Structure formats: structure tokens, C-alpha cells
Image (cartoon, rainbow, N blue to C red; front, side):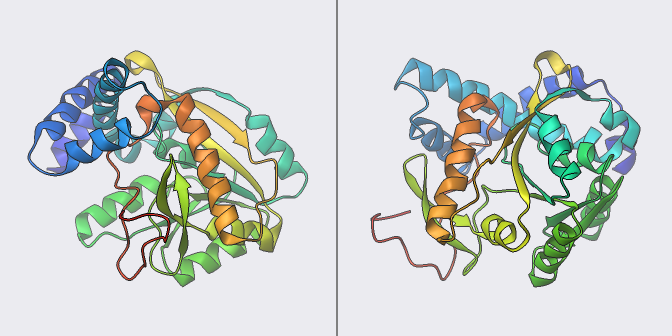
Length: 290
């Protein structure tokens, strides 16, 4: 199996993205909740007019979701140098350089848009980076994930208290950390905040870390260029300090994610169950169901 995966990883990116186009539609038409959740999230987002516009965005998102899966092969299995060459340009990276020059720790906020895997690779080629990840129960997948992600100056830490301490220590050393802001927080680690008009249980970690370290925070998107041409990194500084109130801070993060999703709506991972209720978490009082 690894031999086959390594062969596929060597294919040109346009060919891999073509395979991802097909894969996205195969997954969409497979039995299960995937397609219904994706349709509901797209149509309820408010980003498209009902009817033709929403159907067009849905079709684009289906193919882009397949590309996001297949491009894990080159991200994890190609040599580090070849992965870095897939970044064809950036917009706004000078803001990160300026924050580092000022002695700030760096919080990279990378929503599930485009090829978010390559953001950490690019940063870790220049600076130390600490990233939380959820260990896999499958030893082979765990080894593959660690080998693919823990390259350059990147360090992976588990999604538990020890991982949070590692993130805090990295920021106090004026290094970088990377966080996915749009996953569903676990019980006690989040608050309900609006996301595209619906309640989403949102992590509060970014605000907590920023308050304790005065770190500079940035939203980052690795836009997937058409026809497999590579990726363009977009940097959007979070210019204001997040509020102390957890709900207000979570809402500010969600608004930032919404803003960048509006720029690249087809490349957002609409299939993710962003509005689910974690076990042990009470429903928000302003919503009858989630």
C-alpha cells in the first residue's frame, strides 16, 4: 500500500487534482450523511442566492473537497523541498515578518480552506512552529502523519493539557503556533457563538493564549490555484486584541473565519459538521436544536 501511495504522490499536481475532482463526487454520492450535511451548510450559509447560485457553489465545493483529500499525498510523502516549491507566492507575509522582528510570538489561525496543510510547512521552513494534532489510533497512519507534518522546524503536540502548555511555552519563546479555529471544541473548551447565522461550539484557546503572551495573530489561507498550478498564501492580520469575554472573543474569531470564507467560498470544507453539539454540552438557549 505504501508503495502505491508513494507512486501516486509523485504524480503532477494537475493530475492529482483531477483525481481529487472525481474522488469528491464519488464521496458525495456515497451513502451516508456527507452529502446532506454539505448541501445544508452551503445552502444555509447565506453566501449564495437560492437556486442556481447555491447549486453552482455546491458543485465547486464537491470537487474542491476531493482535491483537499488527494493532495495530502504530496503534502505527506513528497520531499520537503518539493512541497515548499508548490507555494507560488504570498500576499501579506511581511506582516508576520514585522511581528517577529518586534519580538512577538505568532499565532497562525488556519481555517479549513484550501490546502491548510501547506501553511505549517511554509512557516516551519523559516521559523520554529508548534502545532496541536489528534493522534491516530492506527499506528501506520500515525507514523505517516508525523513523518509528513513534523518537518522543518515543526513540532507536533497532542490535543490535551500538555499540548496547550507546549503552545504557551512556544509563544513565550516568541515562536509560532498554528491552530485550526473552525473545529468543534470539546466539552469545557469552547462556547457557543454564531457562525454563518447558526450556533457553533467554538474553541476559546486562541483568545486565552493571546491574552497570556501578547502574541500577534493572523488568519492564513493557502488558496488552491486552478489547474494544479500550486498554492498562494494569503495573510490577514487580526489587528485588534481579542476580548476577555469568551463568547465575544469566539464570535470575533468566527467573524474572521467568515470573512476569509467569503473570499474563497468554494474551497471551504463545507462537509465538516461545524454545528454539532459535543457530548455533555448543553444546547444554546437561543437555538431549538443544533
